[in-house]
Amino acid sequence: MDVLNFQKETGEAGGLRLVPGVADLQDLPAIDEQFVSFMFLRVNPEWRRLNGDTKRIFKSEFQSSFNRYTDDFLLYTYSLVGFDSKADLMFWRIGRSLDLIQEMTAKLYRTNLGSFLETADNYLSVTKRMMFVGETLEDRTRVRAGLSK
Image (cartoon, rainbow, N blue to C red; front, top):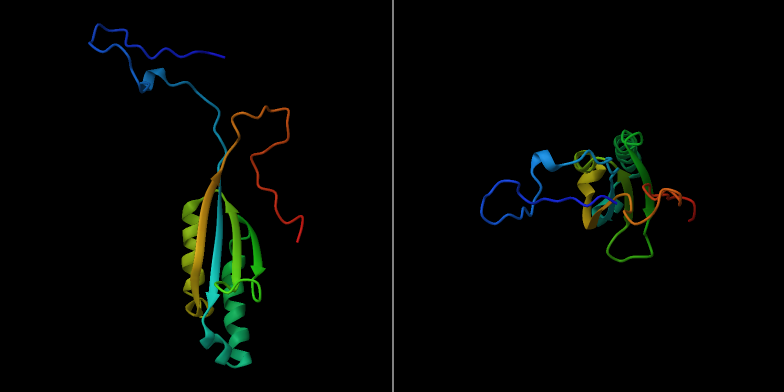
C-alpha cells in the first residue's frame, strides 16, 4: 500500500496540506456507481370511476412510456394493493443516471394515468464497489434482483 505525503515542498507556513493538489492526484480506477430508486405510488380513487375502455387506453399509454426505459434501467414493478395502505404500486429502478430517473418520472406523470398518481414515498440510494472486499470475491458492484418473488 502506498502512503501519500501531502506536505508542501515550499517553505510556506503551515506545511501540511489537507487536500491534495491537482498534481498530487493519481489515476485511480473508476468506481462504477448505480443509482437505486424505490418509488411508491398511490392511485387516486377517481381512477376507479373511469370506464373500462378509458382505463385500458390510459394504461397502454403509461406502459408504453414506462417501457421506453427498459434499456436504461433494470425495472421491477410491484402491486402493493392489499399490503400497504399508503401505496398501491412500487417501482424499483436501477440505473447509472439520476437525470434519466428524473426524466422517466416526469414522463410517467405526464401521461393520462400519471395524472391519477401521487408519490407516497420515494427513496434513492447509490451503490458502489465495496472498498474492503478483494477482487477475488463475488463481484459486488451490481444489484442482482428479480430472482425471488
